[in-house]
Length: 463
Image 1: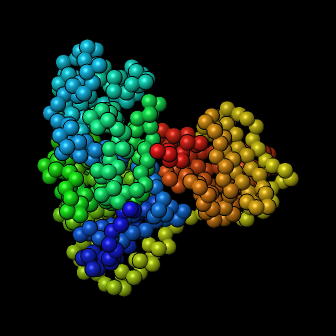
Image 2: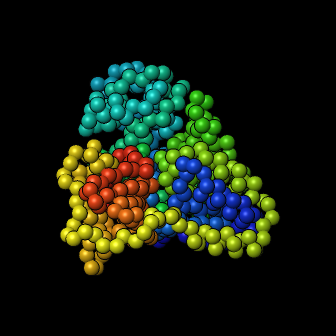
Image 3: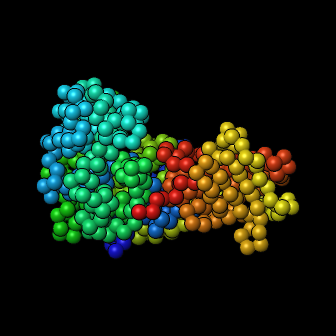
């Protein structure tokens, strides 16, 4: 069953549609912000929703660190089942490491400290942990002596979440996906979730989750409802209260909505709380307004996204709206689209095919080893990208987005110079390809750099 919410209108739910319209305009106009989707829920019903083509409602999107909030839900479910004690030491779950982990403060690290990003380390440890043990992230993490007493200092730290995922796998005897499937995903109607895995086969937990905007909204709504869904309690009330309030202060974070405190894999904010992930994946929960906002995007300025929500959506709640504004907003949201590449039609390629020679990635960019253009009667222009891990082939849209599989491409031509944009539509990422047909030179550059994927592996994993 796919996640479904009752659809209503902004004014029927006490939201002025004009404020939502201004929010959309602010997102589209802010430098460093590119929205891909938005859903606004109030009282558990959809007040407004939209996807910027070529992104779509039924398409999953890479969550990056918003994945952490799903991992935390798995811990919360296991706590309710009596499988995990938040006050148990972390080392107690890894008896095979007991003799090796000798640092006293590390041995006092508890499960609740991992949830709060309060392991006692002052900074991120993922690279150091992997250098210590490239095949066992938990072992590398626990062999790093901590800097302060666990529970006293905040540091956003990927191995904290990875270790939580491993604890869930151990106490449940299954994978994170296997554990969440019947206990969270099925009740919430989430039937499309996958996770990137490391070389050991374990889900990353701290990143790499793929799911729909509606699934993000459902997780937020579950927490807004205190852990109850359709009359069934999935998370304990005290777990939700602890997860969504400050467990450790973090006043030294630079941005105002990142310095209000941290809960259990949720950020506190100037308004409510949220899960978020790199480049603008958001699950914003506003308990005072009974509102959930789910968003995906490719945004470098994530604070600007939150600023827009506070400036335009918050004042619209409990402000009278009109049926006319509702209708205008609905029409606008139905027609959202990201601009394709502009220029002249692609026309015909020179006779045969065009390819760059195999070359070091520094000559092409974006980690690519080769680029290839061809033209056939059925698909028109076809672009092939090759990196060290394989190939991606996609037909090129002529002045518009052409979606094929997990890519959407758009191309245009100015004289002998061809510009092709490739969107990997299950991720935030956009690749710019530029080609001079006269000289045969080509280059590629990311609009935003993938954090843990190469070109040929940007499609979601199959679980």
